[in-house]
Image (tube, rainbow, N blue to C red; front, side, top):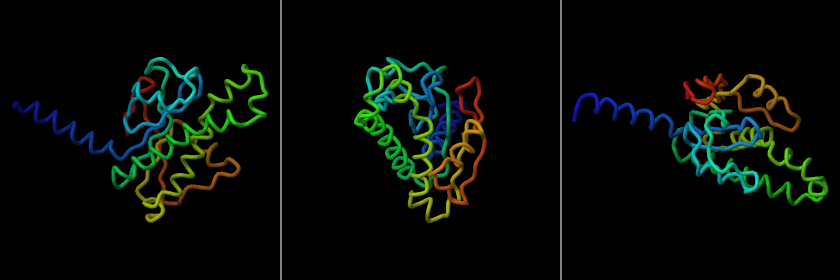
Amino acid sequence: MSAAAVTGAAKTAVTTQSTKNTVYLFRHIQTSQVLVSLKSSVEKQSLKQIADVTRRPPHVRPDHWHPLVAIQGFSRPQDALSFHNSLRDHQLNLHAAKVADPTHIAQPRRLRAPQEMNQVDSTLCKMVELLNAQPQVVANQGKGIHILWERDGVRKQILEMEGVKPLLEGVEHGELVVKRGRDIVNA
């Protein structure tokens, strides 16, 4: 094996190790739908998180899915996976809850569709709620958790919403650096 191949394999191992403990949220730029991923890019299988097949894009267009939030600092991959699964389950149940609401169903379809697809606020509120409930995060008072936001305005809007409990004091915030609109540089 050449030295370049060994170096490349080492870089891949380091990258894989550091990204295992990161959870990513992606936002569709046209519909405001949200996908949760353990990888720094959206894959076709992630589209299964969109419960309504009539609203699900047939394939992934990377230029339509922009990173919204990256949550780093889970001490074990199992903690990141648990958080990812909880947030994904919320996404799946969100559509079912809206469809079960009779006042929502009574609206014309043209008014219902945008409401069903706009998932950003509810998903970010649930993210804050789940982070505050994670045993590992609570035990460390949030120390070690680093949330990288797409824009600082999004963070302020979510954390200042009525009914949203503030994050634990040890949680650090930063800016998500994105190249070419979709490639994450610093997470």
